[in-house]
Image: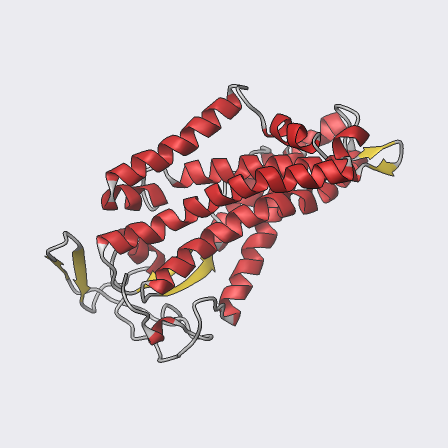
Amino acid sequence: MAGRDPRADILDDDPFRNQKPRVHRVHTRQSQDGTIHFDTGSSTRVNPLFAQMMGFAQQQPAQMHKGKIWHFSDEEKKHLRLATAAFTVALGFMAVGGIWGIKSLGPIPWVIQFLLSMPVLLLAVGPAFLLHEIGHKIVAKKNGCWAEFRADPGGLRFGIFLSFFIGILFMAPGAVMVAGLVTRRQNGHIAIAGPLVNFGLFLIGIPLWGIILGLTGAFDAVIPGAGYILGGQLIWQKMLIDAGVYWIGANLILGLFNMLPFGPLDGNKVKDWNENAFYITISVFALLVITMFLGTWSPTTVLESIASLF
């Protein structure tokens, strides 16, 4: 692992901001470890996100700053807030089946369910998204790179509209932008960090939510099939159960999706670094997700069995 480059921490300055990188022609060279390096000139515009996806090295110099690995600039915080807010709204629309859910629920119950679902799903799915991206960021910075999250406004708008009109969530909130030269091995470590964070959250979530639901007696207080409002009363136990169930399922699904070996997804970079690591990781996620959808096991059953011990 490379030593810490003090230039990797940027306070508020973004090496991609207000830059119009141009590429005259692209030269490649391959080092002994198999890593292909791209050296770019200065005549053709290159979008920074496209450059990151294609593996092009950005050549803008970063300002010197001796900071910590766990550092978030004001610009990055703004993008994280934007992506989290949009992601939460889209999750809320998904929970009520989009605009078509009004027909089955009724206008008032639809609005109430939408508003109550957002905090539940933010608590359950928010960490899966945020900590996944932060995992990429921390490992990239440990390898001497500048790394900050940047939201994709187009992806956020598309995700919100899709969940509102169809009730299906498919969103590309953004990505961690990385500037710096890394080897194939280091790039694989950066890529696999996100899915491994999701797997860690899945493992932690089982005992954590099982204990929370057991101590609160949530399963004993909820009528099967009940919503968040029953007889004019808020059923917070149902909200707590859903948060735990979604926590487990969301981390598995997000981890599996990102391990697919296509395009800019993490799986493509992991496979390029180490095929054994790729196949082991994606197989574990796939086995858990497939058996979950086939009904071999369910987050609800697992959490209820743990909760019964308390």
